Length: 247
Image (cartoon, rainbow, N blue to C red; front, side, top):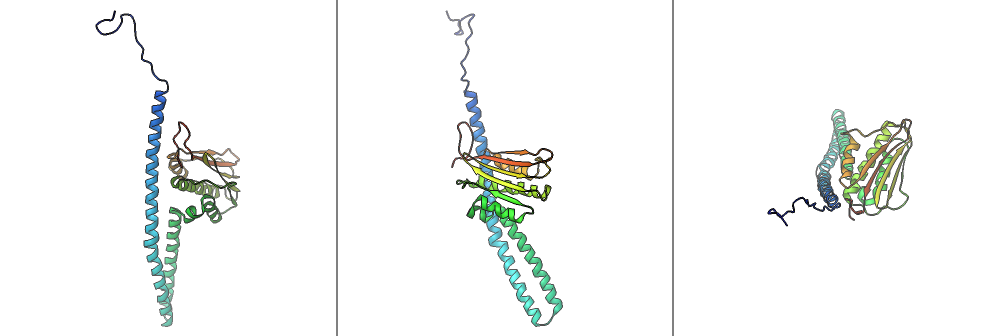
């Protein structure tokens, strides 16, 4: 007989627990957290693009117009044979040109046009040409369409890794390898002395966090004596039970 409490004396009942239930809950929480982080990164990229447009269409155009006016003023000063004024205007025009170059570099760094127009490999080749030392960008096969947030984060990751190699291993050969299947993989290898690591708060650390928002991972292998490999992997397809990027 059952007791008044609805239980059988001397018998305990165990509730069956689905061993997968906790795992599924954890997966849902991880997916929600990843989606939230991705939304933050996407919002950040939208703001970067807005700043880029404002700088290009606003400040940059004003600086170009000012440079043209200074050029006209120099011609007028030369016609009036005022060498002192001509030199002063020439100096002002030179400083303005330097500022314009700096602004253009900033705009290019915010969101390089070549990244959207020509793709990741071509954009990284442009960066490699501007950096000192021998740098090769190898992309054996065409890359698939890559979501913009992943594309921009991957671009800046590779740029930072190349710049670090050029800075800390001057003269070393640097190879950038790009590949993609279910993941986008970027590997930057240099023949320098090794001993590299990611420091909290530095460039690669922040970029690793941005890639993590898309389920990406960053690894560094840099034994004493080299070589150094800085690699990133970002999922492009949603694998079962894993947060990722759906194309």
